[in-house]
Length: 243
Image (cartoon, one colour):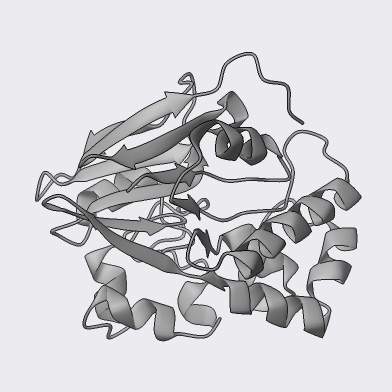
């Protein structure tokens, strides 16, 4: 069983090169399909999103699509306001038919096992404090939730302007707070926070339980993760052109 995990898309089409190279049994997208940081046009972002949704609809078991904070913003939820709002993309994604299609194709988290590892994929990570605040008894409760303010920016102080609080949801929490308060017993794989000065995903440890956390927002440098034969391996494409 070979699983490929790719980080934040933000309009990039490099996922096609990864899919062609790896031919995985399963491919997990960590969310943020829109909101470019690289000058990719609104229409290109929309076309790319359409292609990803079509993949999911054609092969629902092979492709797992998670939700990011920028996706929620462009679906038109006021509580999901964040940076890099694209009005053209907002007009497209907030259309009721597109919105329902997106929500039908996506989920908040994805849980899997590899050998003796329990692996939890989400856009930003799952903390124990957030779980407790939401009265969730297990991670399986998360995907039962419709979009709501439970997934909104939730700082624990006025000094948190970017998501670095253990109260932040699985669409917003930053690595330092995730490492401080991650739910125990899982290897977590997250996007959301770009890994600077690295060309592939980077592993760190939680502070209390010593569980692994993989930071996988590395598509700008063509980095991604492969899980196969009970191993989690960071990889990267080289010399491949993409937007």
